[in-house]
Length: 266
Image (tube, rainbow, N blue to C red; front, side, top):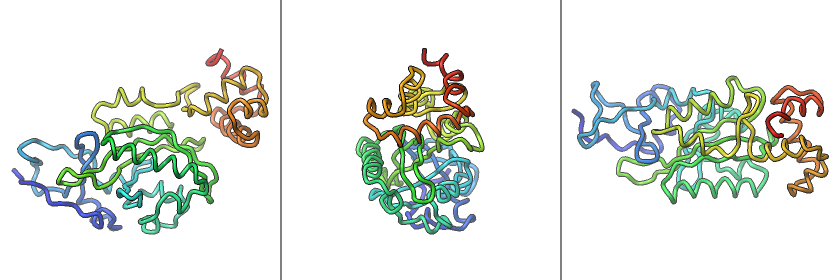
């Protein structure tokens, strides 16, 4: 039986070598996670209780959705390849130390993301958010994010751990499938979390709460301008949302879109 695992410093988690990442394990702890050193031998215990690793940090870096660690000051400590590519960086190393405002062009979006992060850290709770950020490389990005506290070995909060699925049409796997993988890997009881998702799944696609509002109004015959006035958004913003929604369900025209979605919203 092992004694207490050694503290894993932030700089080790930020290490870029695959070998170093393979020696670190992500484990559940309270409503969040801990990162521990891989123990010698097959038995893994803490304070006399068995601890089952969820996944190695190396394997987490190769998951098909965004994976990230932030410190308590919102600085990136570690991200996987999917995320640093989405954010427009040339390597994982370039992303380390970056804050949201360094890449997001919209101050309101940045503030909302920080508010969400602080909610998780203050309440020490797992939360699910729909988030958006306007990134220079890719324009507006929408995502569903699972965020939870990241604890050190003394039980103090070291920062935030999260996963997010990008809500666009060219996902290698369906959004619902990726959300299920995230839940099963990192959440003790995933069923209630699925029910916490702000949006919903229709026609085998996940739609954000904002997208659902727009779909409902389009099906009711509202124009893009009328929808914008109802939701307090610019007509151009509504047009961009609607374009992305049509791509999701492969609808080439507005009439084809209504035909595919009307049964869900009448």
